Length: 342
Ligand code: DAH
Image (cartoon, rainbow, N blue to C red; front, side, top):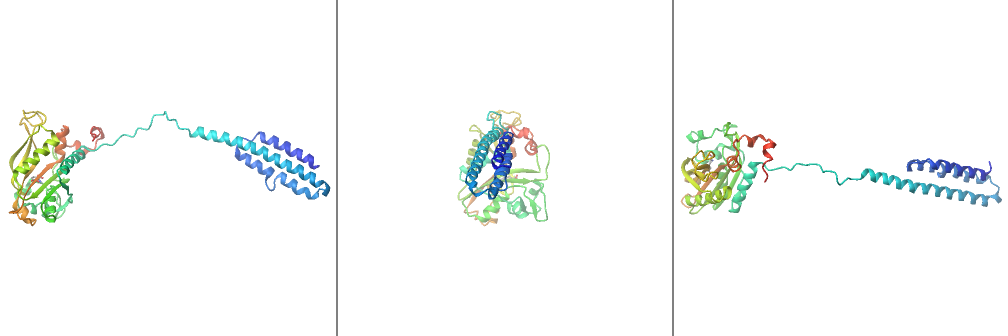
């Protein structure tokens, strides 16, 4: 066939196929068919060898023109298709900023944690340091060093989970007092929050609960210093109008020992359900550190005196937030828990 005719034919063919190309991928495939190394135009060029030498220049011109025209056709189409495809992609990826967002509910602190944080803050403000002792404790720190040797009747005040002859789950954070006094010279001012365990389970007792222990040891401390500090602490946690009362009590590791009451912040002291008509609410135990305890830790009781105070954190949380059943603090029911925001 005459080359000119062949050129014409290719041009028609290109015009025909190009009309139906809808994606840049098919375009690439078809482009190869004409412009690729073994494509139609390249094979025509290879045929130049058979053309008589005098016709070659004019033939070459025609073929170059064909190649150029073909490239133009494809390029035009390509940029058109590309922008259409891009628009489609943008449309798919478009974000509707007016759609309502996903609701990720806020977490909240557990009321026990809220109270712990609040207590810690109050005492940190008074210059206390935090000490955290182990929950698995040995008999010595939990009892003996706290002036409660084996066969001491006070051991019966706390139903203990024993792990072995010597190891137990601590029944009181007071064990931290010994660990601190053994390792630190006075003046000492520590606060020791943590979990404690007792074999007790009813409406007002849980086998695991939280306590906070406070210990101060220095020269010349008296019960008045304890009362002054408790007064300030109680006012900060329950309110300025709340008063403190110390009632004689007994703990083996303090002498004298007291029970700490606060005036009822619900009725102001006139008597209500919260204070069971007495006008007072018990918040913890305290006292002057027993000389035998100081001595056992290598602190001279004629030179130093100390006072200690221990409270149940869940009990404070119940009083502060008006929670009437301690079980609520251990069940993890989010309907209850989400009412507390720190
Ligand atoms: N550890 C005592 C208890 O769990 C509470 C207590 C009483 C702590 C008197 C003290 C204290 O620091 O001085 O019942």
